[in-house]
Amino acid sequence: MINAPTIILVGPMGAGKTTIGRLLSQQLDREFYDSDRVIEENAGADIPWIFEKEGEEGFRRRETQTLQTMLEADQTPVVLATGGGIVMKDENRDMLKHQPLVVYLFASVTQQLQRTSKSNHRPLLKQGNPKDTLTRLFTVRDPLYREVASVIVETDSRHPKTVANKVMDAIKKHLAAEA
Ligand SMILES: Nc1ncnc2c1ncn2[C@@H]1O[C@H](COP(=O)(O)OP(=O)(O)O)[C@@H](O)[C@H]1O
Ligand SMILES: O=C(O)C1=C[C@@H](OP(=O)(O)O)[C@@H](O)[C@H](O)C1
Ligand SMILES: [Mg+2]
Image 1: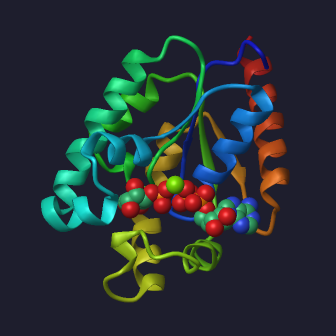
Image 2: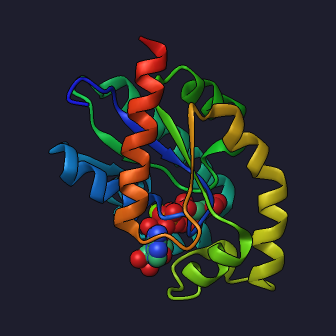
């Protein structure tokens, strides 16, 4: 695992990308980055503010630029959590498909709903009915996560540490099959 390349986590809001990414980085003794946090640091503002002032389009522009910069800059392997909408742009999916290790953290809509209801920093879930929004996004995005992923890990009803261990196992299997 020491030689494993950068691990990129994709999946819907509430899949646990941020949580599991942090755990994996600790287990592997690697740097952890979350594209959402990098966007916020570069903007000097949080995501709700960016959505409010620049719209989703402005956020997506920043997201693509951040992904590009991070993948170009990345020399030593790190763990990178992305935002749930990273797969919406063709150019982002192209970048991700060129990466050796993209993990799709799968979560059912029911589970996404439970996990995202604890906080209110996700602008897309602030308008309308969150269940309808998550269902609509899942229909569009699930095939796109599958398109870019090398590994898929189910997260429903699993403790974060169990998910992190499952990711490690799945990565080992994937790398062994590739070797
Ligand atoms: N496997 C899990 N089991 C229980 N709660 C989880 C799990 N993964 C994440 N969470 C919780 O769900 C919420 C959303 O997780 P987060 O890591 O922010 O997801 P994402 O970055 O994919 O949107 C957080 O409160 C987190 O503690
Ligand atoms: O699904 C999306 O379009 C988004 C997901 C969020 O990240 P998380 O998936 O980490 O919640 C964040 O990037 C933004 O609110 C938009
Ligand atoms: Mg996150």
